[in-house]
Each structure stands twice: as structure tokens, then as C-alpha cells.
Image 1: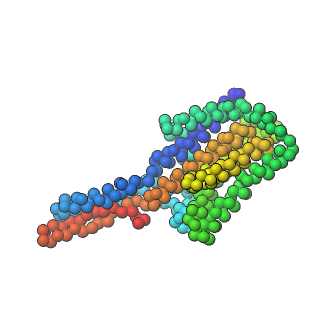
Image 2: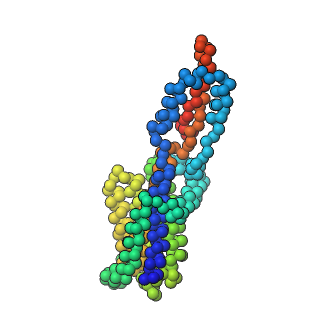
Image 3: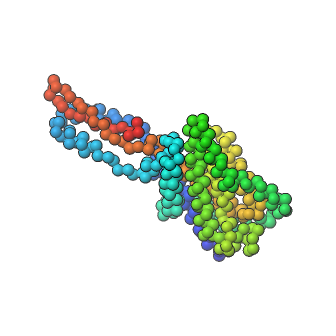
Length: 334
């Protein structure tokens, strides 16, 4: 039990990290509201009379200073997105930089815990502690026959990397062939989601080294195994989460994706490859990874990956001997 409690704390930290990463992304990277952009476009026009009364020399100096580029506050603005290009090189750069930023957010978010994500810590603590304590009992409740193990292994292949990677690659290829931006987006973001999940699972497996149910000393942490967490569960739940968020207006897709993810997760227990806690932990992390990738992408898609640049409009009225300029701001990508 001492080992179980110690590991429960480590798992709590990871799940809360994923929750915090997803929530922090939603909070810190919200798109610029349309009302603010409209205000920025209308305010200079309303004050044109004031600007007209200024001297040409003063207004020239102000326009020169306003044309200085704004600082890039979001590093992802430099990364290509699915609708931007179909060339392999920029897409590969997008994936690499996105994944590096994803891993940074995931593994550093415990240091940004707040009252909004604190409930996830408590929920994770209770769920993990309960499942670790009940793992052996849950495993023994199955028939555990040779047929069960064989069929469980076959069904669980749905959540394997060699199954999911061709699916997301096929989605991208179909999007290119049919000029379908949504299909291309799922292909790119699905690849990012799978790679994020593989990295998280690989690191945790090396840290925990829990023995599988069919190995010597089953369930023992730091015994040399690779049971925790379930890589199949992380991958299939991350893709299911991404699809459910991408097609939030089509509930049938979410129901189908989550149903398949649940079947794959249960089959890993039936195949005696994972304990219930391995599967639940992997599924939870996978769901958060899928939501995190989707929300990160959508927050950038909303503001078109560009910052506002000034446009200087001359204001000349010779009859009134009034000379000036009006500075308008518009998106660089417009």
C-alpha cells in the first residue's frame, strides 16, 4: 500500500497537469473578440476631427512610432496550420514545434495549479487510489480463459499505433484529394495528438515500470514492466476526444468514437495486458490530450495567426488648412 500511495500521488500530478494544460490554454490563448477589433477600427474614425487639428510633423512622428511591429506573444503564431499549406516541410515543422510546446505545457502545468483545476486533483486522487487497491480483484472477476485473452488481444488492436496512424494519414490524404479542409485538419491534428500521447505514455512507463498482469509479480511498480499507463487507451481516447470536439455538432460521431475507445480499453483488461487503473489513467490522459490539441488549434484559428498592423490614412482639407492622418489597425493576414 505504501507503493500504491506513492504512485497515486505521481499519477495525480500527471492528470492534473493535463487538465491544467488544457484549461490554461483555453484561458490564456482566447481569440481576440470581434467587438474589440471593431472598436479598434471605429475609434480612430470617430476621433478624426481631433487628429485633423494636429500638425503634419507631429502626426508623422506618431505614425512612425505606431508602425513599429508589435511583439509576438504567442510562439505558435509562427507555426503553419492545416489550412495554410499542404507541403511536407512546413507541416513537419508545424508538428515538431507544436509537440515541443505541448510537452512543455503538459509537464510544467502542475506549477500553475489554481482553484479552477484543483477539483481534478481531488477526483484523480480518489479514482486512482481506489482502482489501484481494487486492481487484482477486478482482474480476478474476469473469466480469464484462453479464448478471452485471445479475443481481447485481437479487439485491442483497434487502438494500436499501426492502426490509428494509417487512419489519420488517410484522413489527410483524402482531404488533399477532395480539397476537404476538415479532413486535412483531422489528419494533422490527429498526428500531433497521437505523438503527444506516445511521448507521455513512454515517459510514464519508464518512470513507473509496473509489471503487467501476465508477468511475474503482477501489478508491482518499479518491477521492470511497462503496464502503466495503457498506451492503447491513451491513443484511442485521444483520437476519440479530438473527433468529438471537431464534430461537436454531430453527436453520433462522439458516441461512436467513445464507444470504440471504451471497447478497446476493456479489451486490454480482458487480454491481461493491463489493470483497470492502467486503462482508466491512460484513457483520462488521452481525453485531455485530445481536448488540449483541439483547443490550442482553435484559439489560433480564430485570430488567423496574425497580429494587427497599422495603416496610415491621410486626412487633408485645404479649405480649412487642416492636415493630419488617421491610423487604422487591420490583421496582417487579411
